[in-house]
Image (cartoon, rainbow, N blue to C red; front, side, top):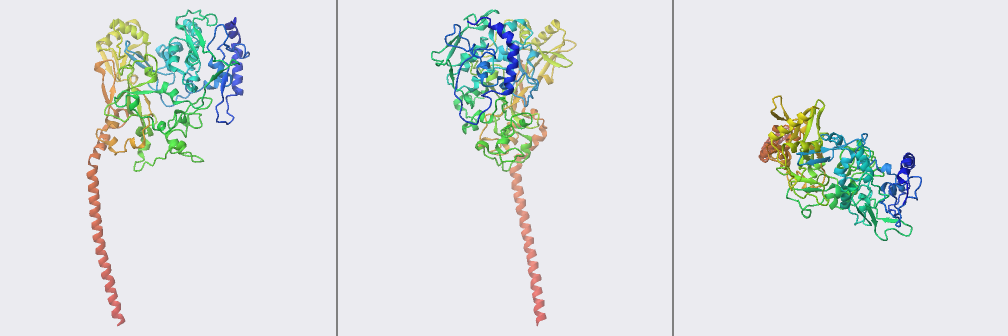
Length: 633
């Protein structure tokens, strides 16, 4: 086996960076298409992660190697595609503070029943979220928690950027989780994303993309190895390639597609409706676009830079994707406000007429308010998502009560002033309040503090909340104040902030830090005949219409903190005005009859006076004719 590889890598690292930058500036053979719609055959050699850029052959993986290594995506795919350009894509650039975060999306949710915690986490500065470091999550800890549904890159490839020496040592053992191109672009039906998840759970980061391939298997657990483990010197973690994987030139065939199959998107972007109405897949209808034959990437497009279109109105103002303006709902169906050529109707999109709908609806609501997400009920219902509930992974908790608790649909006002359907969850966490705001404490610390007050509590099999009382909150806050003087201890749950007052009595009240975390939803899109308002205006404007007056679940580990709020509370509207306006629809049929009867009466009066006027004209004309006749005589 090759000797001194680690030393060679260390010596040549600066040269690698410079050469990679130069290559990225010049572009590579796979960076730009020649115009052909055909997909090149990816019959290529495999390279391990330690390949120096100046020696492309010496580290090629060969079937006769004594210790077979996992192939590196960066080195293998990076021979033809500029890896650094791909790494700027939306799925990988979250830690970059220079990237415009755009409209709020789904955060990662750190949930722990024993700590009575579910808190939104994001590297992007979205409202009502916290950065990982605020919760004590280093890149290593973040990957440990969420790598299962990460496409690699970003924080998962920055594991050695840490101030903790033990984490740096472990990152050398586990390797880094490189951008997994195959997770999206592999059309091999045997590519197993669930195996990828299993490998990340074992901290086998450098092995995960290889293990997911149908032609390779990986045994062994990096988490069980010592800090001095060297994969080039030991087969404790062993890679086995299927016989005949390599051809006579030691190349491997990858079934690669440009147009990503929907099934690849579903692994990270599935939603599980817990309303009981369409809970099972065979009961639910597909998004109308998918039913029409479109795929996810027909709308969510990107180039080499992987600046994927998210698809919301106004995205073109912050995105460098040239199709952002024409690939939103309005851009596709109606076209942008100004265009040199007609672009509406893309991919056969019908142009909606919206006959009889007052224009104010388009000023105050998004397209998805009427056409997207589940039909509103009298009360919001729970839902699960892949990223929040590890859907699609081995051993995922299938209980509907499993944390975190997410509720939908919530029709709430966006920062742009338009109402849109959202998913929502209520944060719950222990924190320290200072002048500059509320900062959560690490979950491990919270679990330890709660355990001192409520010992010997095991998580429920359902994954639901463990009960918490106000008396227990007071005891934990008192304990926090004794162990730390950094700020005032507080607890957030159910839209309220709890703290001890000067007399050590528990106070609870509203606070911005206790506001729910929400993100807009678009799918599934319903056909026009299932849109809100298609039956009558009272789909939304009835006195009990869920759009305004539905109940939004308030979730909390405290039984006393649970309840509901009204949908209109999230819309910045005056309830009395909306209620009065809705009440007017009760009498509108009568009003129409009165108006019709009044119009008929007025018409009768007008006809009567018209006839009288006509009679007068006839009389005048007849008298005039008589005078003329007399003069002629």
